[in-house]
Length: 333
Image 1 (cartoon, helix red, strand yellow):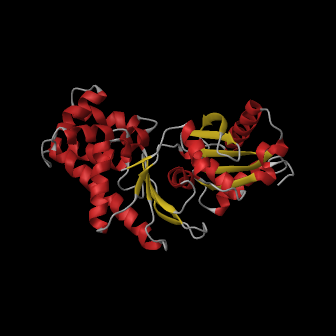
Image 2: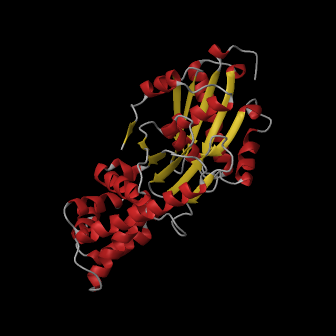
């Protein structure tokens, strides 16, 4: 670290996913001073030169917005999807080799950003349930992180939005064939896709360039059908809840912490009715009270918190309050 006083030092946090990458810069007291946004930074779904350009542009952008020099940057924490393995991190480090940022970069998986956005840097498990699903846990010393699920839509992602949407499509087609019960999902999906016959859904699904996200978006329709009393939709959501409980229970069994909090993150938990179903089911299966946190802070705030931690800065209540003031207060379910 340079000899610049802490009061003028700055920390940068970056959270990169499959669709967008967010960046914030802040001081040692938790005050966020500027933000920036760009496209996906997943090295497995984007050309490496493009990811490099995007990351460098984000850092440069927030530095320019706050009019600071490189000497004032105490740390830059990248929390990126597709960065689980050391080989992935090596690729990212190469992006910064020979640059003025090289010695200031930290690299971690994006799940840590989501976790710390809920726990403010404390140990815990984050359950991410959006297009995909994964549970990621960290202990106090951040050693031996626990990962359960997250194997992608072809090999896993049980309980995810994609999983729910896929089950909905399968159920509708089985109903059409006479192999399954009648379901409101048939009419609702026909209205959604503006088709007159459910068979017309086949070229839509197989011909869409973004099939995975398209199918995952149907989870919202399943939730509406369940709220309207549809039994098939209810069964689909019940199965998704059970699968997510399996994921969390497996993560808990591998953690050595006591009374570890569970952070809920992802689009599926934005539905209060569905979130309540999951919380009730998990508490019932664990047969104990569990501290489940729904963070209203974005994951990039967690990346910023991790950046502060890496410089051994204390994340006290004052720092947490400063960050929360910039966003929305966090709540629990």
